[in-house]
Image (cartoon, rainbow, N blue to C red; front, side, top):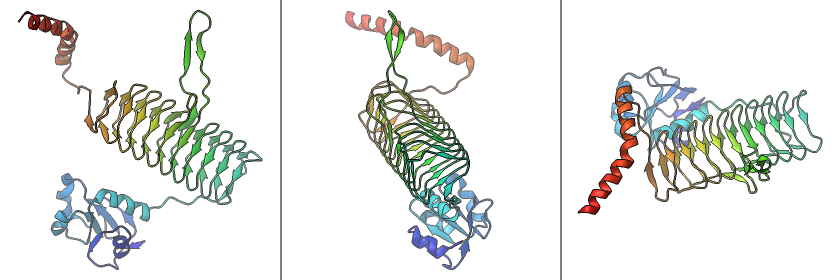
Length: 337
């Protein structure tokens, strides 16, 4: 439970209402009661403001006069809501210690305040920081480092030599440090020759990694995920990729090997990025885009066609195949002028 005055002071809001009024949870504008904080960030929901029963609403100054209940005025209501929600609904603290069913190497360094869940394994030479949580069924290889306050959910696999920073969150089923897809062609003798993957994975602080996401170890040097990166579910990051700080990428994104992604990029769902490219800082990639060449100017980029009526799509697909011939005919005509 927190008072509106405490919320305003902690999260730098301007309070219009009683400072001693208390709230215990967050809720939507439509369903909030007097014990809840709601928020308005999308103008599409402004119509719900007049009838809300929330104990307080986080909103911009332009909506203040329309709000019938106490309000917390913020320049960024959504980010402020996220912080308030975290304060009112903190994660349940884990009980420190090693579960009896866990298997921990004798030389592993486990902080006294860390928690190792049921059936977890921690390999030789690994280090688990203060207040870190290793969830049920997690498998940590040798020489793994997990920073203070980091939480691994159930069934996370962290392979040898991976280093994870502080306050990270890794969701169920994620695999970090598996071999990159490296094979040398030699059909005259052995077919495909596996290239040993000798690097590791280095993950910074405050990174979140979604369920069933995979991050491959580097071939020689490390794959690097810098501070504050947010990765959704079902993302594939190949060997030797470098992702800059505070970049976010949505589900089903695939980044091929040795690609460098800049800082503060926003990568939408289903994006594919070909290997050995560079994407500069502050780039936005729209849903299902294919990046086939480096991007060196900040901005928004896209390269996909939306769904269309099947008959029209077939006609257009046929015309796409004719574009090369049409271009050649146009070039020939221009040369005759």
